[in-house]
Amino acid sequence: MALPTRVPQGYVDPVDSLNREFNTMLNRFFGAQDGGGSRLAPYGVDVREDADHIYVEAELPGFRKEDVDITLENSTLTISAERKESKQQDEQADWLLRERRYSRFLRSFTLPPTVDERSVDAKLNDGVLTVVLNKREETKPRKISVS
Image (cartoon, rainbow, N blue to C red; front, side, top):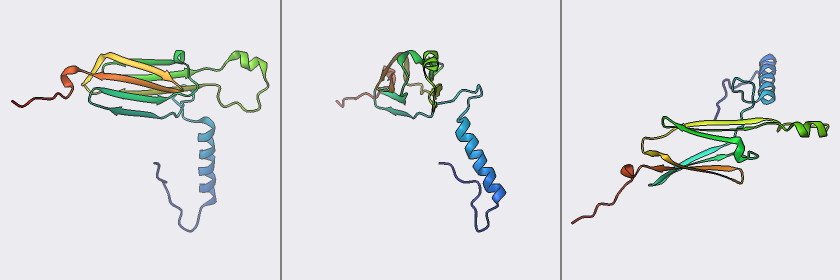
């Protein structure tokens, strides 16, 4: 949650107000930038765990499995997806509004040492990517019987 940098009390400077409105307009127009000028998609990610697995669920609406790239290297899980514009659609229509031409998703997570990096499963279903990371056997809780 972002906190306001300045809370107006009484008098509001019209130049300051205009400056904030202009900055808000620019931020909405350009969106989040990753340095290369591409628009980063603001989709949510959930991470949860149980005794045997860690689950990473990422919203990727409109992405196909061919658009998604998942890497696991040095205990870092990276999920990236890129949706490019279709040249065929450009030639067939006069656009009235076009906001979905290109989007990119990129998130990285540092994994705990309990993860078995050789055993990972990923599925994309109904716009939700689910990555299941198995925990190493020696790190799983085990029941000890009392004799």
